Image (cartoon, rainbow, N blue to C red; front, side, top):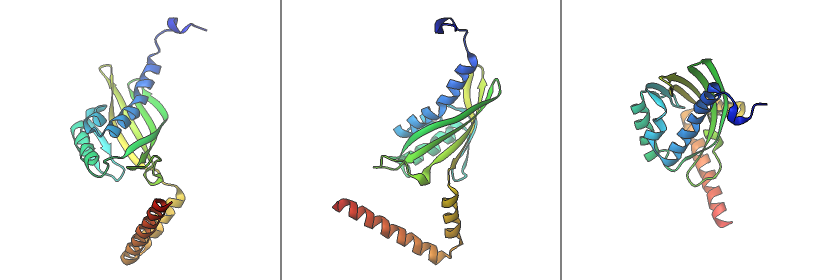
Length: 181
């Protein structure tokens, strides 16, 4: 066994550690509400596909899009439970990575299962520096949840509205009950 301080420099391990750090940096930026920091790891002409299909081109657009969300619809949300599932090098300067993460809504400690996400990253090393060239962010759905959504989609518009009213009523009952307890 070679002592740690005399081992040859392992570039591959360093590259894997760098690529694996990207989701964690993005999570830190999200949790601070910084669109600029969220997009910092992207190349200037990167592509980002959001969970609902929005395609963003370029670091500036990715930053602006996320900053707007952090100040409105995603304000107070936190990303939690990041797991890098794999990093695979397609070439010494190109890597693909798969990661998963959950979203905790404002005032909640636990992630909301309906917001579990997975990402596919493409990173490229240029002039000695790793950058993200593409990220696809997608929701993770169980087959049961997808079947429920398919059934919901098959309902008429009035029936879907009625389901929405029922869900809101049940949610309010649960909140009222937890306030009394």
